[in-house]
Image (cartoon, rainbow, N blue to C red; front, top):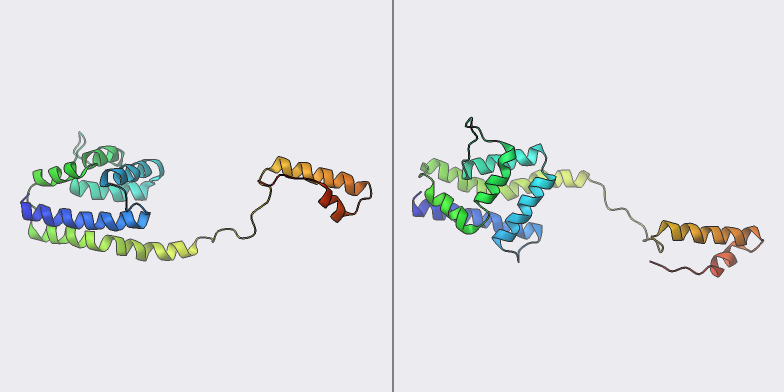
Length: 175
């Protein structure tokens, strides 16, 4: 690939990458550290849709082929390993054939619009998700401790002690 083309693509990729790392709260991490996180997340949580998206992106950048010539989602580890450092990414692009100008323009356009498009798609979805549960946090998070205190209060109340007085007599260790 010609140096000017490679530079244009790399610059747009890094701009996209910087936007993504800031959105994920990783602006102080290196490219390599963030790629490890994304790779681990894709392997652990990636469903068919996420894997397909990553595969489609990887197919454009890292053209691995299986024995029958097809690209497969299970090869995602190979894709990440091939671009897990900036040097490897740039070497891949350097070794790639020169794409036609239309393809370069399309790739740069995709890099520039990917995050804003993801935002447009994800915001309506995020608004449909439930809010965090409200209310005051429990003073006693340990269920066994809660049961013990309830039983002691119940015993005192059964002996004729006023409920509020019984509640005041039982010591507890808040957690």
